[in-house]
Length: 111
Length: 117
Image (cartoon, rainbow over all chains, first blue to last red; front, side, top):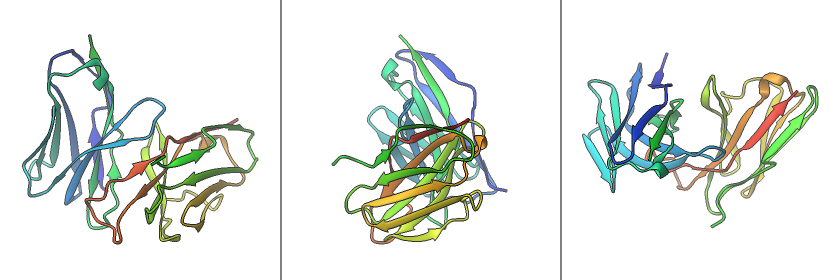
């Protein structure tokens, strides 16, 4: 069955460092991959989308890579700040065009 | 724009009672989604509508769950009778586009936190 895996353990880093979150998937051939941010008590908010034929996408301090051979996406936040603390969800979109979400990884940036 | 509006934000109800969750999508969006989020299962799609018509309800867990969209600006998700295992956060979301595209951005509401005791 299709599976999307994100690290269930929280990632703790110091302010100013680069945070790297991982999204792995199996039994899936997504054409697109999206990353969302979710703050406690709020709904997910779209951040970035990357297509299968794109290796890397950037937006300000955010960078996403997509390796369809490894079946993996990496999400990087450079110069992280305490305000970046949140849960980050990856979502894969295939032929149905409806995203399937991972469970998310919690990021905690310490001042 | 006010975004996707959901009500109630929090609901505590007793097992066996009927629960109705409400959603107002972003004006002009023609896709509406209902998701459920739990620690165990993450964010799951329950049902989605296109132009007020239900397209895929395969994620609806049981016949106790039903969803309607009587017009472009309103949808309900009803659970009758409710059970403790229905406790979760229920999100409504909407998306713009004449045809569903993988590049669509889905806009989520703030969620309805349901506790069934």
